[in-house]
Length: 165
Image (cartoon, rainbow, N blue to C red; front, side, top):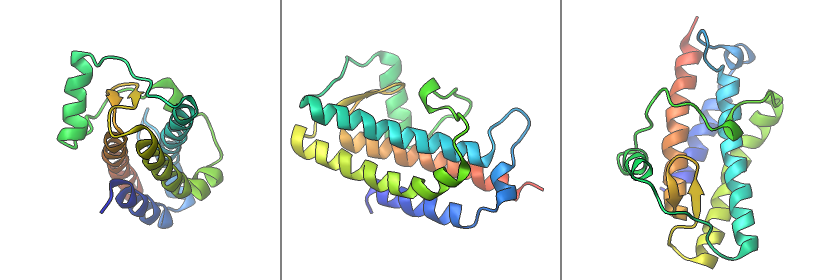
């Protein structure tokens, strides 16, 4: 199964059983389930915008990867492990979008992101296309793998929050 198809199904399943009470649950000093979903939504819309700009430019916009980025890429994409405790880049931090908007649009954004990533790969090739703020330059396939690993990591957090009493 394609990575973003798997992610889309996992997100759709998780939000289908999310009550308003569960949406607002959070641990002390941590994001609520709603804020985690908003964070994911912002990463999807940010990726879509980045790849739309890339398509308009007609060429990859990458910089050389640092050693730290290469190591992070091995962990996240190669080992499919999202380390805990890392602070989100500013552009992906929750900013108070209405939960109704996030819940109604997030699954569609995953599909839209999958399409733009595939279109871009078809137009510009399978090489590195766009820099990730933490992992450095990635191919379209690596972007898809990142979003699957990242999304599943956060869905585990949401499941833990749902189980809180």
